Length: 94
Image (cartoon, rainbow, N blue to C red; front, side, top):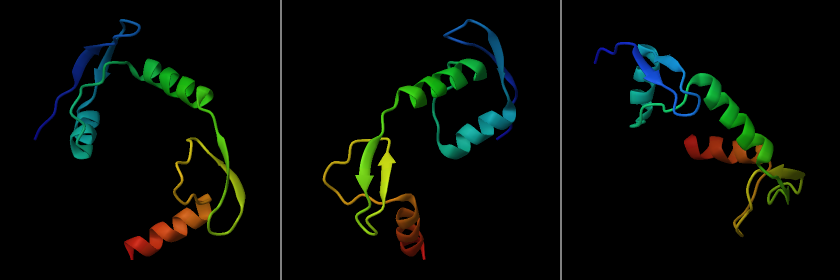
């Protein structure tokens, strides 16, 4: 499918921005259905605000016992540090 650059208006700041053909192809490849409602600057600002307000929960890895933090509240399932999580993930893929 051929995509063409589209001019969109940001719902947050009202500025016009271009949604490029390559971005549209990326959205389609990922299965995203919605057109971006915010310009890249407002999207970056919203992303930064989410990360700054996101709280961390201290954890102890269920596999190696290493301490760490996760950006969510564990709900009773095993929780792993990044290294152990990646090891488990690699085994499932292989």
